[in-house]
Length: 127
Image (cartoon, rainbow, N blue to C red; front, side, top):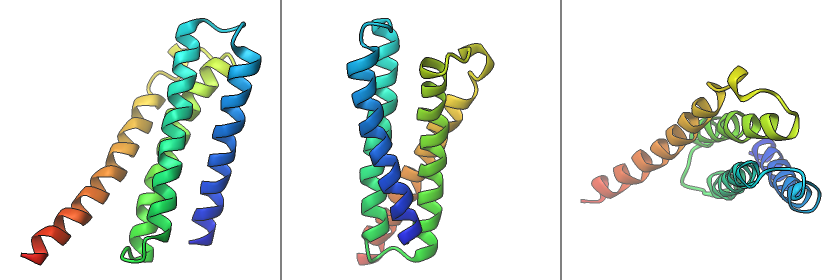
């Protein structure tokens, strides 16, 4: 759990640093479309950091469940946000890594699906 929380804290830190960097250093250099894409990547990263904090401190989740959800979200952030950062911050052609962003999005969806199934089962089992 502490490993997951350490990774989560690092992802939160990088979201803030990248957000500040994009806002203050790239505003004049990137198109409004590129800035919007970067903002989306940063926002999705931060949303999932907050969920990861919840997942890893929620005591009703088993350690195995926390690990599964965390891995899906870690990889989802890496692929989804990371691919957008790679395109706009490192100048890699979107055509060469077009398939990475949707894979990241799918991983994020799967993480949310696991959470949904967990909580639905709790509702069903209480009846």
